[in-house]
Image (cartoon, rainbow, N blue to C red; front, side):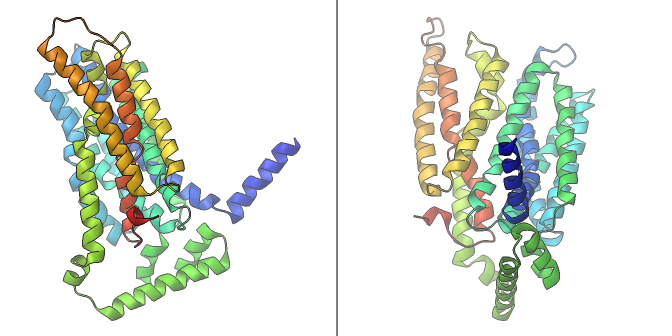
Amino acid sequence: MFLLEKLRKQLEKFWEYGSGRMVMAAVCAHSVSISIGMCQGYSAILIPQLISSTEYRINMEQSSWLAGLGAMTNPFGSIASGILAEYMGRKMAIQMTTIPFFIGWLCIGLANEIKWIYLGRLITGIAAGMASASYTYVSEISDPENRGILQALGPICASFGILLTYTSGYFFYWKITALISLFFCIFTFISMSFLPESPAYLVKEKDSKKIFQAYLYFRRNNSKAQEEVEKHISKDNNLHKSEQSWREVFCSTETVKPFLILVTLFLLQETTGIYTILFYTVNFFKETNLAIDDFLASIIVGVIRFLMSLVTALLINKFTRRALCITSGFGMACTILPLALYVKYFEIFPNNKRFFPYLPLISIILNVFFSMIGMLPIPYILVGEYFPFGPDPLCQA
């Protein structure tokens, strides 16, 4: 009883005077990433179930559309996210993201024709792109010491969403999984309603009282809150005094350099094959003829991904972003090469007896292991760290 009482007091102190409210706000904001994860992993369970069903007999072209629509429309959502975050606020942008997610999952869950599934995948793909506002919000409410680990909650939530989708696909029909996803849309919308707007966005309203109250909610310290208010107002005043043109702002080194770094990282992320494995996990294991249930193998991969996202949260403040990305990229290359050679060998010699039958599973697990160290989470984390904050995480010692 004494230990429980001591723990309770420590938790109360953490909530009232520590970082408790900041952590809670980060969890609520990044909860939208659960919906992203479910959207990303959904085609892996949807396509095999549709192929084996008697109600829907889809071909390879249709299955490609079902997987692709979840990603093809992401750029439109990303553009909308930037506009909403700038003119309606970060908090409202996150809440607005849940609306297309809700509509998209409803279209899929109640679909009686394949065109409704297409529409649902298209809409949830747009929503997934819109969710980037959560990284901006968390970056702006966090203090520098905790920003990295709080931003790492995004990939953790996304990995949880993928694992939940794979697990749900093992036990339930694809329509049930879609309807389960509605709960997380509702949770994000309601939980964000109880949080204040990002103080950095409130600077636009030039209301010192609102900015102070927002910072006080997260910092729980009057002097720290006032210091943050003065820093933001001073920075805003200097920006207006400088009267920079749009060309000077968008073509400056401070803008162009992080933009090019992020574009390069996201391009490398796409070319590593992370999302190909993600979208077709069940189909891949089915074609490798493993002596294990295909859905169960995908769940194993989902568990590894989720656990590694937790490890990344611990590594994020101990190593530089550059070191994590280099280690991740090298590890992914070393683990995918044996798999590529293995698959190619049996394409050339299909009648040969398969040796090392568990090599594909081990290779995919290790590939996911290394992807979660850097190449998958780091680019998303840097979005919030580069914009609007200035220090270059890739150059940290």
